[in-house]
Each structure stands twice: as structure tokens, then as C-alpha cells.
Length: 173
Image (cartoon, rainbow, N blue to C red):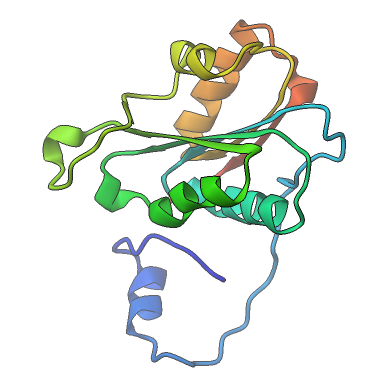
């Protein structure tokens, strides 16, 4: 599956205009966001917007293969209607008892949909609300570059070592 935000760029205009079934040449995937092997360590996934794509693969694989990893997915978007895959990520909790989704919306004043979940940016307080020990999990961060940098800095300030943080920036979205 290929997932992207259809912004107004030359590439995205061509992509939007392509007929279904058109032939394309794709390179990749690239990056290193794969779930660690040690199931005793909790995985905390921090996603912003379309940065959810690598984490969607991780959480669905964990459910399908019934992996023992405890996984917390913190997923930030402006509004529910902007959140790719939100409904299927919510439903996945019924399939995998080791998985917890914490979705948060940052601009609910501009939304046309109701929201009962978290609001605001993912921050130290939100992590502490759901995690008993912020320093011991392995963290994965994907999203806009400034979000990735800010969350990485916040984790370091909370005592998380860089060896326990994996990142992927989704620039240009």
C-alpha cells in the first residue's frame, strides 16, 4: 500500500490525475522503523499525520502474528477527519490486547466531527498519563520534521537515551 497526503505539488497533481491501475516505478521502502525483537521492552510509537504509515504496518503485523510486545501508539492530527487510518487503528484494539491507541487532536475547533479522545500536542504529561515508566520503552517517532525533533528533545529531557529512540521525518507533506 502507498499512502500520501495529496498536497498541491507537481508530483501530487500527477499522482491525483493518474488513472487507477496505471503502471509506476517505485523505489524503496527505505528507513529503519521496524519493531524491535525484545518483546519484554514496551514499544511507544509517536506519530503525526501521515507519519502513521510505518506504524500502521507495525501494529497490524503485531496483531496478525500475535506478538507479545506491549505497544502504545500515540497518534496526533489536527482533526479526526484529517487522521488517516484512524477507524481501523481504533478497531485494532479489539484484536490485540497488547495494543493501546492514544489519538489526540490539536485543532478540534475547526472540526465537523465529535471527538472524545485526547486533545493537544503529544507531550511529557500525556506520555506520563499512559506510561508507568517513561524511560524504559523503545520509542519510535515519525511525522513532520519539527514534531520529530521536538518529541526527540522532550524524550531526552525525560531521561530517554538516544539508543532507545528511532526516528523518521516525513518532510514536504
